[in-house]
Length: 332
Image (cartoon, rainbow, N blue to C red):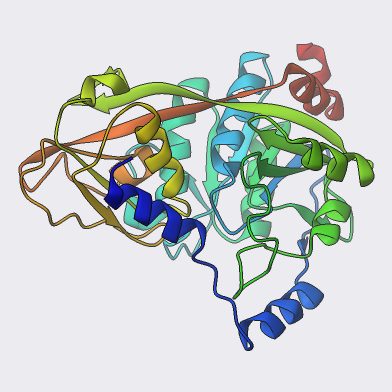
């Protein structure tokens, strides 16, 4: 990795605030934050929640897409309730691939485009209304960003962890980005989905809370550039700029370093924002597919290349979801 990339990745990995003020606030957050949300579950459907341990970056939305795809391929009628953030959505809305990203949000639009060919409906809006609408469309409803609900528990709750940094600093905001105390996250979950190779410490944590662990893998399909998919290695030797608006851009920087690609410029923005690259003398700008939804085809004369990543999900997890819905059980 270039000195620029090394310094930036190190700064990003240690960016959590720490001090006499932030530590007490972080402990207060941990005492009061709950991963359980009020929700009245509709009858006759299986409702599956997918939540991350951290405030972004764990991979819950790609996991939702992988689950929905594999279930649909098994003949299950699936609908997804997506996060509409940062859009301000009033009424419940079924998202199509033609919607504007500013109206429905980047994650909802990405899911709609990703799942369109599988006939999976994507719904956004206030959670209760969106779940109710999705329940009218499918026998399995997957809710992105919901770990657990009350007064009745979800049919299945999946806690998504990135194996390389499952809990990051293990502190809640503002000293870190853990959503809630780890014990509360474990109590809310039914199963842990680990993206990557779990360490022994992580395996021990999962076992100590009597949870089942399911593996998931990131699959890099290359980059989408000028309307077609190419190998990432084809960018080696080009003047590559990186423009990202994701929770943990350091993961992308380390991926590029592992392929011998050294960015000549890096433009970062907060998660869900619009990245605004300003450098010249760049041959191609590399971003994620979610970021590409908010960018034109070319920026400052250089084309946009979007990393095409997908997840693979363990078959036992798919079978578990199918078993929860009487109507879907026939698909086995």
